[in-house]
Length: 412
Image (cartoon, rainbow, N blue to C red; front, side, top):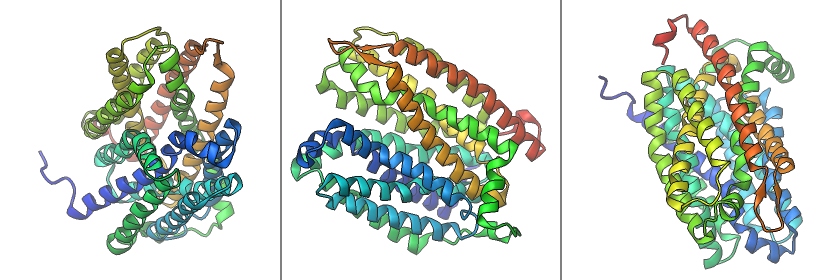
C-alpha cells in the first residue's frame, strides 16, 4: 500500500483548485437566499429575479463554447488567472450594483468568465494527475459543491442580515483575491500540451473537437448527467415544505446535514472509484439514485429524520455518479484537445441544465393549497435519463480502456 500518493505540490494543487471551485459555486449558490432582500431593494418581480439567476448559467454556457477553440493555445495557469480575474471583477460589480440592469449585467460578466474556469480546472487535473488517482482528486474537488451547499444559504443570510445583500459578494471577492495570490505565487506553469504540434487555428480546432464522433457521444452523456440535479433542485424546497410538510425553519438543518455528509462521502467515493473501478462505482451510484429518486418523488407527509436519511443516500448516489463519470470523461480527449473538450463539455452541462430546469417547470404544477403536482412524473423522467446514462458512460468506459490498451478489470 502506497503511503504518499501525492507530493506536497500536488496536495497544494488539489487544495487550491478545491477552494477556487468553492468560491465559484458559492457565488452561484449565495444568490438564491438573497432574493427576499434584493427584490424589494431593487423593486424587481420574481420573473426578473429568475432572469438574474439564469443569466449566469446561459452566459457561462455560451462563453465556454466560444473559448473552446483557444483553450489549448495557452499555458493553463495563465488562462486560469485571466478568467478568474474576470470572475472576481464580475462578482465585485454584483456587490456594487444598485439597479436591476447593473446586477443583470454583472451576473452576465461573472458567468462569461466563471463558466470557463470549471473546464480549465478539469483540464489541469487531467494534465497533472494519472487516471489511477484521478478519482481521489475529483472526490476532493467535489467537496466544493457540498461545502457551498452547507455554507451558501447561511452565509448569504448572515451577511445580508448583518449589513445588506451586497456584502456576501464582497466577502467572496476578498476570499477570491487571496486564492488568486496563492495561484500567482505558487502554481507552476501548465504548458505540456503546447509541446504537441498543432497547426489548426482556433475556429478549426473548435469545429474539429465539436464534430468528433467519440466526443459527441461523451457530450450526450454529460447532457443527461446534468438533467437529474437541475430538474429536481429548483423545486426541492417547495416540495419539501408543501408536500413533505417540513417546517421552513428545519430547511437549514436539512441542507446542513446533507451537505456535511456529502463533504465526508466525496473523498471516500473518490478513493473507492480508484480502487474498485470507476464504471462500477458509477453503475452502483446510478442504481442507488434511481431507487431513491423514485421513492422520494412519490412521498407524502414524511418525518424530518426520514427525509434527511433519504437525502443523504440520494446525494451519495449522485456524488458517486459525478466523481466517477468526471474521472472517466477526463481520459477521453487527446492531450492536444483537452482544453477545448473540457470547455465544450462544461458548456453542454450548463446549457442542458438550464433546459432541464425549464422542462421541469413545464411538468410540475402547483395546486391552490401549495402542493406540487406531477412531481412523481419528474422522478420518472430523472430515473429514465439516469438509466440511459448507464449505457452512455459504458461506451465512454470502453473507449477509455481501448485507448489505454489495458484489461477492463484492471482499469481504475
